[in-house]
Image 1: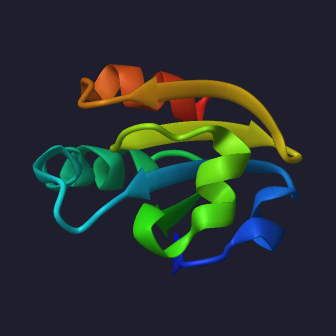
Image 2: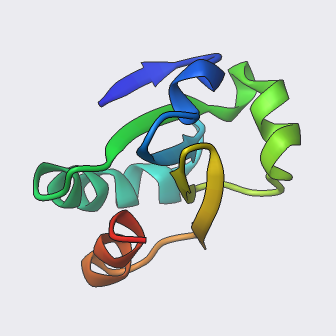
Length: 96
């Protein structure tokens, strides 16, 4: 797992899940323990991105709200979850 304000180079190699969040977002805080639990059991790398520090990625992915989880494989989007979801839905995204 990594946290970065501009992780674009980390997104183009293999399976990656981007967690777009903001520190003022209560739903982001609610989903974080679920994401961390799923991350431990899956091979995809998790990259956490603060939307207020990453305008290029907000534009790249067309983000309109947070939290958003985006599955990528070699830089190509393979799935997306917006808002709070169950552990099983998050796990499915890590497998996308």
